[in-house]
Image (cartoon, rainbow, N blue to C red; front, side):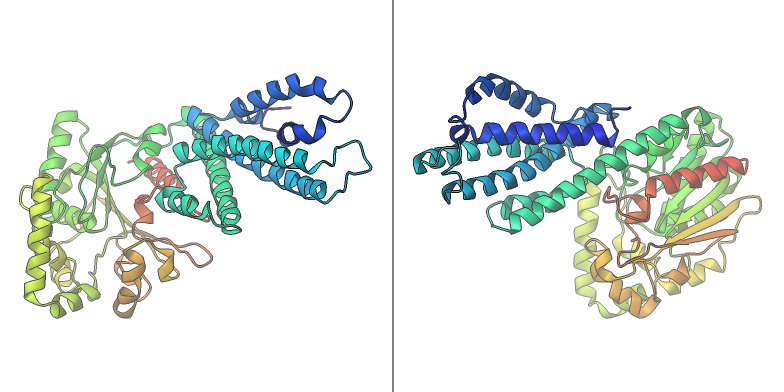
Amino acid sequence: MGLNSMPVKLVTRLFYVVVIFLFANLPSLLSIKSFGLLIPLLVLFFLFMNIVPSIANMAMQTARLRFCANGCELLILFVISTTLTVIYSIAGFAGAFQTGSIVSNPKTWIINTVVTIIVEAIVFWNGIIRVYVTSGQLGIRWRVIGIICGWIPIAHLIVLGIIIKTVSKEVSVENSKILLNKSRSDQRICATKYPILMVHGVFFRDFRYMNYWGRIPKELEQNGAVIYYGNHQSAASVEECGRELAERIEQIVKETGCEKLNIIAHSKGGLDSRYALSMLGAGKYVATLTTINTPHRGCEFADYLLSKIPQQQKDLMANTYNAALAKLGDPDPNFIEAVTDLTASACSKRNEVVEDVPGIYYQSVGSKLNVASGGRFPLNLSHKLVNAFDGPNDGLVGQGSVSWGERFQFLTVEGRRGISHGDMIDLNRENFDGFDVREFFVQLVADLKRRGF
């Protein structure tokens, strides 16, 4: 029987609940004959429980996951033991034990309540601190909500339940993913013939410590992929970004001797890449181009916005953005040109001259939000506007604009959420039901390997 087996976990949990309950209610139980002899053992077990809340969690694959799982287990123990102790204390104050061996003195029950609060507080704070420090899925929002609602009766129980559920699922998902990668490590399913060049979209850069692609590159590398980044500026015309990408592609090929690259490009990065391949001669260095949520036919809502926003406001936004990104490393940021090149009218004209390069395998992926609230800010706000002009969309790009090449995949999930423009690059590092973005990219690259690229 392995350490992860459910019986071991349940038996350990039951034992620890009994330990916490007995330790928390010592003042009222001391009147029981010979109970005092158990105190040294209770103290020992209570201390051990706060260090190792679950034997089963010792099998977790990383120290972070073990620490996080144990924090969650402490919160579960807190909820169960507190519930039992509250029932027990109410019965004690009501005189339910007057005829039994447990004392019925009100002063004793008052002392018992104080001890209970201290003991349960130790368990709670040990658990919540572990979870807050190590969880990746709680995010800032639920951490703040937990702090605020911690002082509101009923609400604090609901939020605590959400925290426990979220963290428990996170631990299970992340541990399973590590085990999956270990089980297939010898296969190196993402070790493609040619390295992967990942090209970001508009209004982002390839920062060293804040990866545009979230957890995706690490997952690909663990399965054998060799990754490079476009390193082009965040906002400029398709022509300018295409020129930077063409230079970057040639640089990588010449420095590594890899002959060709497989490009995976998101959003406007797909337009920049197509231009570099077709118009600037970079196609001879590229084997495949996979575009992710790229507006190949543009965004009609962008045409509308540019026609309606007063020039003074457009200039203000552009100047503010350009000044900020120039300080962050963009050599010549141009907010207006970047946005203009995403319009349906600009894309229509460009598509007349930017032709696919023979011999390159083109494919595309798109997604959609099922409801506006399924996306994070600001995609939850833009979704309805985009829907009015471009129909079903991912918060920015309409369904009809994303298909390009020999193979097209369109993704969503059942229920209200859907998959947003940001979800497709793991922008928020968020796990949710129905779609594992990291595994999707692993299989996407594995397919390139199977095709000989």
